[in-house]
Image (cartoon, rainbow, N blue to C red; front, side, top):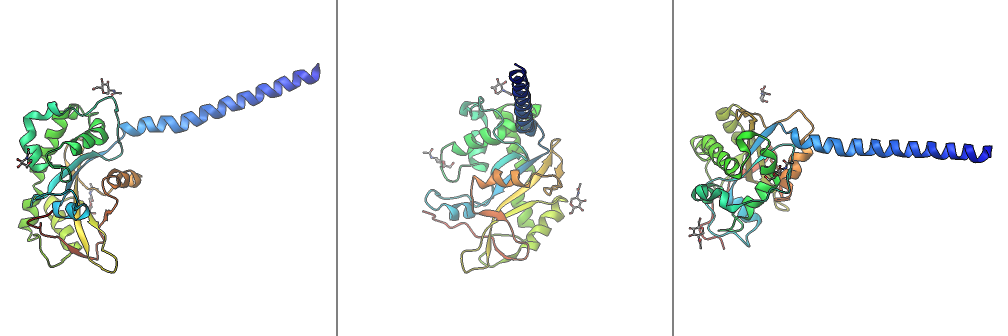
Length: 256
Ligand SMILES: *[C@@H]1O[C@H](CO)[C@@H](O)[C@H](O)[C@H]1NC(C)=O
Ligand SMILES: *[C@@H]1O[C@H](CO)[C@@H](O)[C@H](O)[C@H]1NC(C)=O
Ligand SMILES: *[C@@H]1O[C@H](CO)[C@@H](O)[C@H](O)[C@H]1NC(C)=O
């Protein structure tokens, strides 16, 4: 009898420990994920260079633009925040002309695959700000910031134009830092095997939640998030090597 009683107590103790462990497990794994989505700190306005995108995927590019186009407007520490909020093409009819011009889907011309992806992965998180809480507001803000940043003219005014000769990465970095007064993030296509020249691919300009320019550099622990944010789009881009020769390739006239 006594034996059976103490066995039961032991069993209950185990159960309590088990319940506690389960609670701890859920507490640790679930809660941070929920908070995670709300705690983004900055918006990353990402531009890509069509000639480089097309070099990475020659299959699908047709007549890429000769100017930097938008890739996305990304909250830095959150992804896919609301899966029950699908992209709705009809919401952005009023800005379609500018979307096609400045935010085109380089790999799927005349389609909206890029926009769908950007909305689902990044827009649904940006929507925690009231001024970005519809699809029209979100994409319009991207276009507005793109025009405000005016990366194409800034590079051109700094003498950084597409060329078959190389640039020093430092010069590109310094030109952008000098103009905007904040640190951008610049990404390149790695040198081909046996070569040393990297190819300029993507330029990110960062904003606070109040849409003030800010450094893209970050003291907090979001490096991995930032990496996965663009990794899925293309595995080949990486933060440029500051000391390497850099090609800013002209757009070829007749890409296949
Ligand atoms: C997700 O989006 C839907 C559609 O806009 C909205 O009704 C719902 O409240 C959102 N859910 C959350 C958790 O924000
Ligand atoms: C596809 O888009 C391009 C550029 O936006 C435009 O010039 C062309 O007319 C479009 N073609 C079709 C079939 O819609
Ligand atoms: C931005 O970066 C520059 C250069 O690294 C630094 O001098 C400046 O203090 C930074 N600004 C902020 C607000 O962190």
